[in-house]
Image (cartoon, rainbow, N blue to C red; front, side):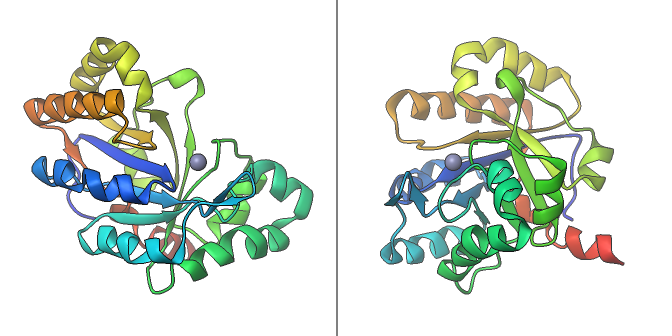
Length: 225
Ligand SMILES: [Zn+2]
């Protein structure tokens, strides 16, 4: 793992907004930010990520961002694993996703809608280095450096909450040690874009680094030793 300061932000983007993510790249580049993009291929029965999007996803990867799996159909993993069992879930929701992202190393997972269980974690730990859920009620959760060194499951806060509580959130990030996980969807939405600029300016002024999930690559293998 690359050197990890006491403070860090792990920023991720979920779902299928590939074109908007590419449009947003110059902003990430301007601030020197590497992020994580968790891809879901369908939503409510409709295909959202198409074969022509794959080269764009590869470009994100080639520019140092991490590509993760957010499942094939964007169903609630906790419920579907309880209903189908591990094997069927992996076959229906994970393997098609990995296949469609062919050639990319996909080692990180985020839960559609956020819910998970001990059983779903066990199912997915076999396939991924880390799992990402969401925090309750938009709460900002800080992971200590020792948690960052040992954990494989993390909860992220929706960046939208920063728009509502930016002073409170920025104060907390400035004064607390540890890493926070933030997630968003479409960064080009007007007020989302402005929120991101606010967040990136704050982090630059405060010396807080942004890290992609690839800093956790190989954690699964270490577990097995
Ligand atoms: Zn999602």
